[in-house]
Image 1: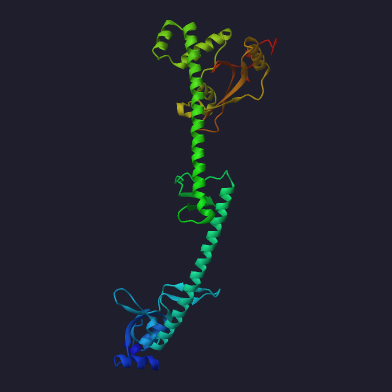
Image 2 (image 1 turned 45 degrees about the horizontal axis):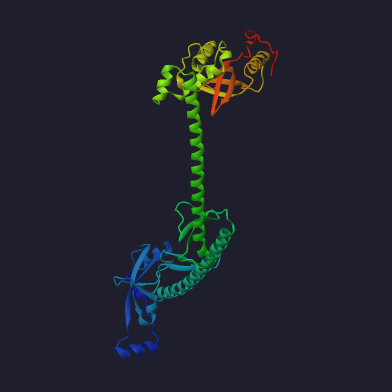
Length: 392
């Protein structure tokens, strides 16, 4: 560093500045400031040849005349530094770019070179700040225009709503604009933009009132259905229930499922002799799989069973005959052919078992009373012989 200082010549001051300083104090004013810069590999070699330390990052103290005081910055601790960092330069698009690292030199710079670099940097910094301020102003204008158009569109479209979180207020609301959430504030915004929070709040409150009204209407409907169910159950228990059922109903301990089962027994009494479909698919599937050598020792657990139930797309003669008989027995009921596909969930390649059932369903008051009977399988049509005469 000493070699750098020795090679530097004092920066000449303007005569008028020197005269002013001499008139005030009799001595030309100067300021000691730290200059920080970097040396490239070539510059580090030159530093070593000149007796310097050859380090990439260099800090030297130089004397800056009062006429160049604008090239020095002083931090709150009173440390004076030459304005070399951050540095400013023009990029490939001629726009000024800011970098926080210090400038780099290929040779050890003199004081004059450092001050010239600081002067150039200071001028570009001023241009950068003015351009940045202008760009910020244009951006703010574009943002104001965007908010204005968004406000007009929101106010013109009665179906638009503000975000419910945070909750809209007469002063403030948040609206999604071009996939971005934009805040509108009646106190800080101006013109048509300031009208958005009040309108958003009005729509929010109207939606709340509608939602409450719909909820009340749904509750009333549900209450009406519940009362109707209680009435039908009470009538059935009083007319057909056993002594024990009447006592449990009076105590509020009679399960609705038991009442529905009793209604089904009474409604479908004509088909009492027909085998009913029961949910014993786990046992059925295990017996079915053990018929195959690869699954002869399989043991299924409740979590291994997958059942898919859907209405059958077609029917065999035997299945159709059964459906016709049930429709003749229960002309007021709906009779459909159900298909239950049983599979082993842990082995998708395992054979699947399909069970068919005839579902008989009739609406009694608010209840759907149903019963399902085993229907002939596709492989054993001969096991069921029915007469299709009188099919509805």
